[in-house]
Image (cartoon, rainbow, N blue to C red):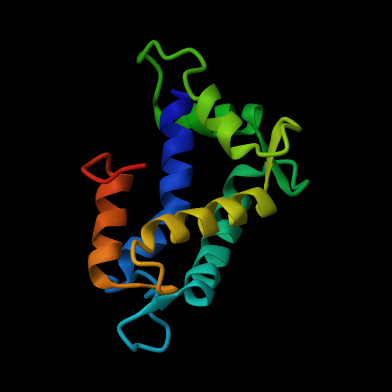
Length: 146
């Protein structure tokens, strides 16, 4: 159950990159509309998503998301009955880079930068439509996921 919530939170945070050609009502990563998503554009969109995610999950407003806060957010979603007891601990541990038992904004921002760099297959400093598509497939568990 926790795995689902963590995956959803991470996917929500990182999904922005997959939306350079965003549907109506979704932020467009390509702020200058030049057909390229730069790291700066990606980070700006991620900052907005981080704000929304932390507002929702950081219930004690200390700037960090704990496993307990993730668990509490998961309960209203009706995730009971899957029999997953703490299966998201591995994902949480990967997100908690400094191993302090909480995920900070800085840790999430660093993760998004790593995701951008992995998606930039040709290392040209920007994401093309094809690179964004590959990233989207990876987030959905398809080919090219890392």
